[in-house]
Amino acid sequence: MMAMNGAPVWAIHLCGLIFIITRIFHYFGLKHRERTWRYFGQIMTYSSMILMILVNIYYLPWIQIFSFDL
Image 1: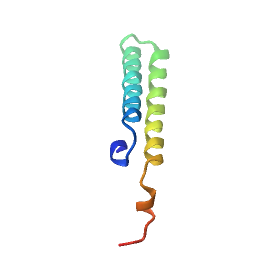
Image 2: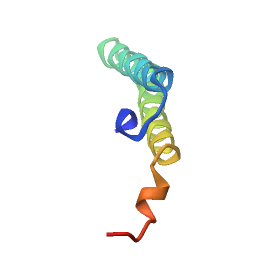
Image 3: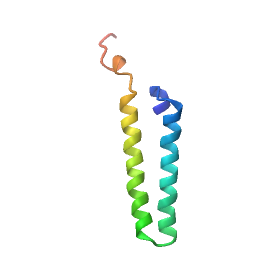
Image 4: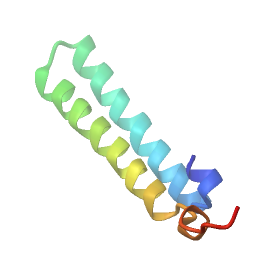
């Protein structure tokens, strides 16, 4: 969605990299049964998803959405 909305390539890659790193933290916490890493991975995963949502909202083509031309 970010690419279709016109977000810069660096923003797409940055959000994807953050998401992958946080999933690795979560996996590390599950594998070693350390709650700190697991909770940190969960919180950061949801934070990265919220970041992706906000970037998508920012780059939405608002002119096309609010135009009433058929």
